[in-house]
Length: 391
Image (cartoon, rainbow, N blue to C red; front, side, top):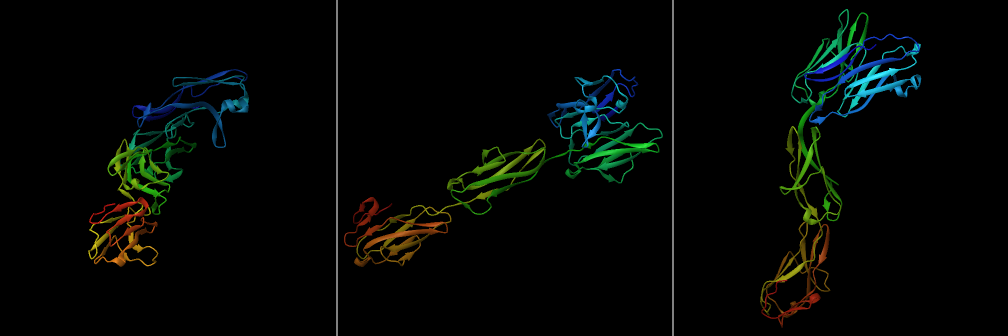
């Protein structure tokens, strides 16, 4: 029968130990096989929970085949599991039941599955929580006579080491792999189960990306994503203009508006540390809003009159001044000054605000030299002589 197998990790243990190494029984009888198993109750602040327990004697598609699902044992096997104890009962023994029976349990931890393997080969690890930069020792042990020689494997690739101990100095995240050893003497060889090294580290180089990556237009759908290389995975917090915004890895705007413009950054954090991204300027572009026209001087014949046009726009708008029914602009720029106002200057005027996102005209304005009227036609607002207009 299968001998005990232990994987000792300081005061914590992953392992399966069988009550008997060999069991002899007669055909047609009933046999009980029992074992105990152990595992670390907590790993990286995560409680270990056993999710599956079963016995097997062979593989199917390279995976252990549960005896209760094996047609050769149909109706003849019974499991009994209690707190860290396991037993198998096989009734009506047959000659072809001669085999090595192994108990396996699976947990919620990464790589947290364990099988009592034949050959008495085991691997122990010097740490349970492995931080980047620390040193870890894996030790292979085997009950063999003559004494065994050892080979080490990383992700099934042979390492150039023939020693019972594998020391990883200053481990890096690239060392997060599965390891196992093979023990060999002139009578044969046996392999240990896999040991998974999970190297943990704080968040590195938090970054913010925007999708789509082209210029951001008002009304479009925009997503900001925070990413960071971290183990365990990082939690994220977003900031806009240095003020907390939300705790998610993404910020989504289904229809972005101008007020969403600002500097965005994110903080990535796990139990080992944190890092912050560089700020990303979200520049929401939009066409000019309705332009407004103002007069900052008295309107009288021979006076100097200055008209000013303004409009909220991003990018900033360019301005052109037009007289009604004339195609060519009278002037360009936000301010237009008529230095010697005469009767021929009387008429209807408007300004056009334009950027690469669009253009928009102001309302028509009547400027009358004789009366000094400045009339905003669409609002029927009349400003009389010698009164300054601010609209």
